[in-house]
Image 1: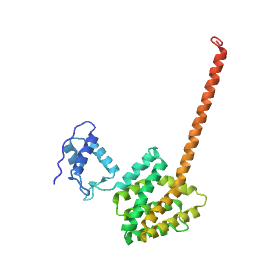
Image 2: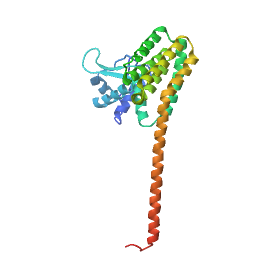
Image 3: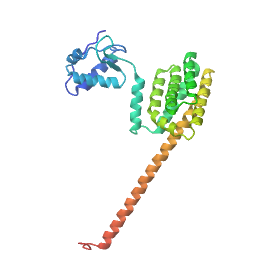
Image 4: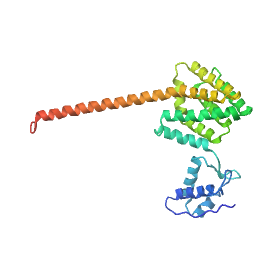
Length: 278
């Protein structure tokens, strides 16, 4: 079915272009893999400037439903894609940094998602997926591995298991939630007193998780996944609460000092009385 583009109103033009493209997606007229017409053709159809069109396309690219290839040739231009993982990860990471979600919220979301994915993986994962996850665990076991690489592989491992569960949305959400705290987890890994012992402990849990999944022990795998997450991630939550508590205490002490100072000033004014000072 051919896509029928309609001109849009001039106010907030890039948002109206977005709305028009979204409507075509919702109607099933645009699907993953479809290419949009060139800017020089599409802008006049919408009745907007090419700059407004580009702004709308940039928004779509940011949220992971469009990729734009510059230049000429068969691969150039804008194409509808399905790429939610990076987009959701970026979105959650920004909102976490802005304080929209607490560390506790993120940890509880991870626990719920990964309990589900490990239990399902024990039922539905195929050997090929688990072999790939096992290769990642092996790479994490190398003595010379540094926290940054370990953190990247750790994310891969958890997302691989979620993917092997057969639930694409669980996989996407697991990736996004894990990405949202990846920088914080990396900093925590870099600051541990005994990196070698920490790495070995975490990876021993990875190996046991894989064994439980391979042998079909879904409930045990889910329990260990929760223990694994609450173990290291839980220390971040506790540290965050301590830091928040210190900040609140500092604010309270500061407020008390301000109140005492104001009372002292008020007492001094009372002693001076009206006209006590010129």
